[in-house]
Length: 239
Image (cartoon, rainbow, N blue to C red):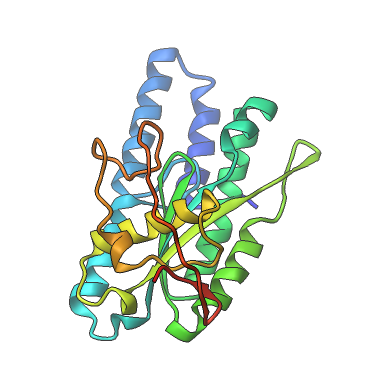
């Protein structure tokens, strides 16, 4: 289901109006709309927040809330997104992104949280989840995100990889460290190095960047040590 935000509704109205305008005026209208969305801190395609809103929420919770031990940070990446675009077209890819964004947004809202599009097919989130409920919650989230998305009289397969880290496991660490741990955790799950659900650790939070990017992203190489997995509260951890 599309996220019918006021910004998105205005976007549709402006696009219809722009079709009847001279090109120069249509361009000006589009520029004004983009500026409104940017000022509102919303992603134009999905209607959910952008990275800065997530950063602001994370910093505020960690710095001012003494009950931040139930803070869970997530990073979600769409699997095989390029294949969707290549096989079905960019409209289909956009439909998958909108579906993922809407599902993640609703899940976060029910848990006093916030979801944001970080760019491309990546999303971040911060929610309040008790430490003991984390494994069950993450499994339920993955099941919700990975339902097919309808598009042009067909169902598009949706698959996502989720990385997470809990503030209780990284006490005193800043927001950037929690997001890095969730990012590395997502890569470990996506690459099959560890089973889901997996919570990022102190070691994951301190993984060094390569060319300014998290190891494992295009253009980098991650030499990962052997992970001795154990099970506890439904979660996999490094030793």
